[in-house]
Image (tube, rainbow, N blue to C red; front, top):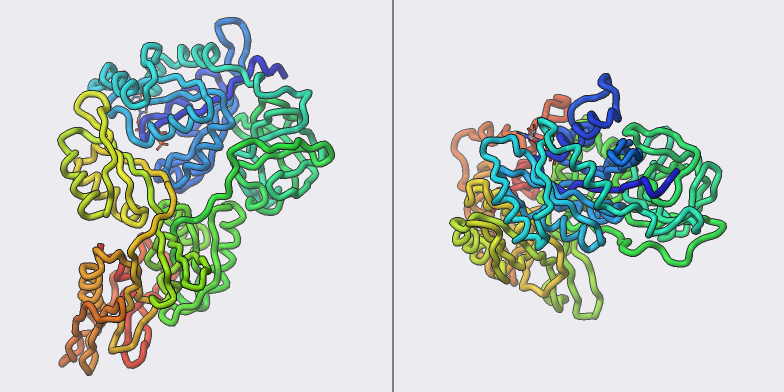
Length: 601
Ligand code: GTP
């Protein structure tokens, strides 16, 4: 153990800019994993991550690099999650490092999320090494990429490196620069100090309990030690410590500056929160590391079993997922339309999608996911403040004082020619406020807006890509809740309110959304023997209406089918459940009508 020879780094890169390929090359050059085990893309280990090419868990890797100066250095590369839903996790992974490689694809240029993550690194006082990747590509544009790095991030690109993760060109030079430019962890604490360790990720293992991914700031931790998580003062006895080589490898101890894992019989990841500080239970430090916060779900949706018999199975699945996913929340709820299910909270839509996919794949359960909504806050006339996770919780107008919705700071980097189009959508359709624009290299700009989260979370990414032919990129960050003129729209089918169809709309979009909704429902609800009015009510008035005419011949067959969840090759019995209809008063409503709100945007 010689902390002078340790370097802890992260690689900041946009999706597909070649981070995994570069790390694979580094592993190969330093012979860190034998060829038998070497498979492409070592870092992205979870199935879904691999398929989607995104990282969710911050998988670290330790390599030993024999440098030109004759010393062998330990380099810990901490992978960071690659999606805006996980910004907090990214910031904690960066907090575990002294430096970062800013990797930019020379054929693509700097993307918005890269800029945001680089700022996070700068906030965490990291030394940044810019590196232009994929220089082997014929359309690599190294000079322009360097200019963008200077413009957008404001760091000099003079000492930027030029590499190709694919051919290996420049990779050794990069390793040498990491050794030279990134400081050893020694200035942040020594092994003589009291134990102070950052939890930058945690994973649940069904045999060993929670595996904490940690960076030690001060002191030493070893088997048998009594440790304490500072946010909740829970104490544990350490069962094992070790490093990532890249598989977990048991060691005698972990000391200041090192990155590794701790196993201490912790039962669920909720008790070992990302960003929390571990210290000694017998000789604790006074102050935890800065930056800890409890992440809160920003998006809620209902999850229901395809058939009611599977409710318990679904609960078990969610319980299991929760063991490994502290950010997921769920509470039982009942809907007259869908029966018993759960209201689940997610960090964002990607997080929601991953949960859905894991339930279907790992637990083989067909589920119905209701339309997601962001979280709102409300102040009632009696002074009470509430959070709204579901349109049905929206208070009656006469009880309501004020409603608030979450706002984000939205940054879009785009070629200049698409600026007008994007500006139009954000301002006219998404209730966004333009803040400023600045240059981002040649023929590109970065635009800043403030926009309600609820407006960009659902389809904005696709709109942006369509308008810019795929060239624009975006990033957003929550800036808080703002007062907003929001209303609940109640849908009446055959004059009976159907709570499960209600939704929340901004006043400026009230008529448009209500109109679309009643029209959509007209298509989705089959004809009956009598005429069925469908009405949208808000502010105490009916504001939109459509009518389903009485039927003459049997057209029921037509409205069946049309799977509402994707890629389902699951149990036939469960599938059958999805086709069932719900009786609301005298009207039979197919389940997919309850997802109509998803289809009107
Ligand atoms: P995420 O895990 O999604 O963040 O992607 P990543 O940044 O890890 O990118 P990955 O390494 O998967 O590379 C993306 C694509 O670029 C793959 O098709 C690679 O083969 C290719 N690629 C990566 N590095 C290079 C390079 O240096 N040159 C060329 N020509 N292609 C590269």
